[in-house]
Image (cartoon, rainbow, N blue to C red; front, side, top):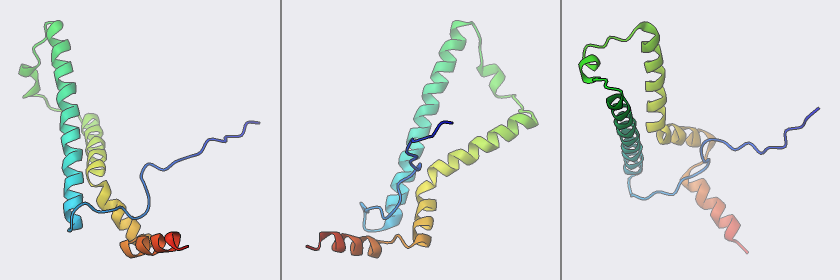
Length: 119
């Protein structure tokens, strides 16, 4: 019998997040923009890699890309990928909703800091 002594850490940080801007929506928009920038850059790198590999093999993909019609299996896969993408972009908004439901607010965070800092 084996025992798993590995610590399991959640995917995201919990609790109040310090804000950069006065309006929290600006923090969310900045996070979303940076997530989108990262996603676009990764796609551009991958596309460049695919085009380079195809070019080495003498394939001209541009002529096949425009008329391509995905089958239902590919459509389902794309929808799952799209949902994962949106989850990454909007994760801070979802996390804030969960934090608020748990009571992890700015006031609770400030109260915690006062208790910890008290001699």
